[in-house]
Image (tube, rainbow, N blue to C red; front, side):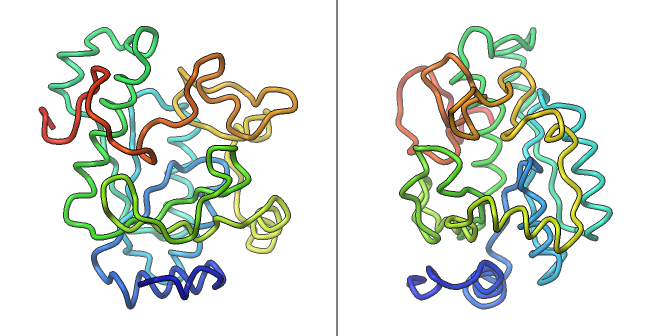
Length: 234
């Protein structure tokens, strides 16, 4: 259906999916991380009212929240939705806020996967900033995919490398995430994010020391393992 956009420039991909293929039925999911400003800038030029879903897990770096506010103001974004975890789920499963120390998968489900599933209800497609160069688990991703929830997933920057990323920031005078100057290359929750490990990929500082590379929003939903899924206490 959307194969023809696979080799198109990122801006053309976004114009096609936002204006022609899924008008009013597509959202950008953004972490406001180290490379997020690129897609946010592109979308602001096409339609600044595009829904932008931001998962405020309650465990983010304060610098990320400040960066979000600064980018929203600078780019004139009017569709940002700050999504938070269910209070009922937090009270039931993480009343002390320390679940990440005991069951990181369940913590991600409560603070990221479940809230996102609820936030995406009614949308037919969503846009991500994932790139092949970020991690080995993303090395074969395509511009257009069918996501774990059955929606169309659009990854306009899938084939971008460091040169393209750096050039876009410079050409458009976009601010960098404040923690990038300290050596962070991939930024999630403060509780589970370190600087990248020597000689490893950008995301190696995420859940370092654990057999985990993704929070779950980009992986298939499989029942079991003690996770909570969409529809349960959202």
